[in-house]
Length: 251
Image 1 (cartoon, rainbow, N blue to C red):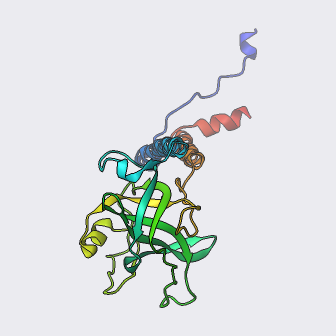
Image 2: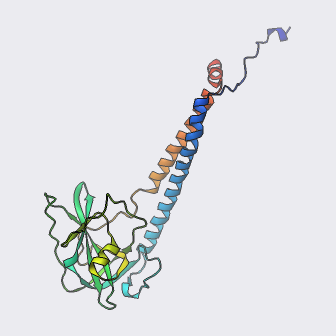
Image 3: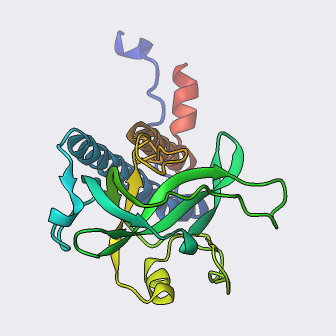
């Protein structure tokens, strides 16, 4: 008698393949997962970069002439005594600070003791109202002792077309082309540039972003990609089965 009062069991879970949705999921699920893990890797790289910079930021400054030409000197804090070559300055174009366009001023510098050359980034200067008018940069005469940290671009910078080299100085470039500058000057240049401290002679508006995107933002991007991957899986489940009907029946 008890068995007669039981409700008949409803249909169970059934797989009903939808080829279009399956193909879409198979194509894009690996992409979203890969992008999520890539963002996590980028976050870890940025944390390591920040830790390296902070570690060398508190380290004692060394004389640039005492450093070996090889080795990893990224963010190494140094002092350098020598003389600027103001006749061969480089202006790095399209450098925006606080919404204002301008340039970074890079000047060749010869070390007094060894005679070696390197490029010194003096910092940012605002652009004139007209693109045809270049900013006037105050010169730094005589022998001076600079302080700052060494920097080398970690990868090939993005450039819109080929650099346009001028017949006269200063050169206006999109990115710093050290080999190209060395060829024009007919000198051997260090692969490292010196970014000046604010208190250093010749410093303009300094202060560079060591990390352009914080690790937390990369982590947030990763979460978004993984959420999209989860949404694809849920979409595939509902579109290729009777799961939706089962959910509605139980609600």
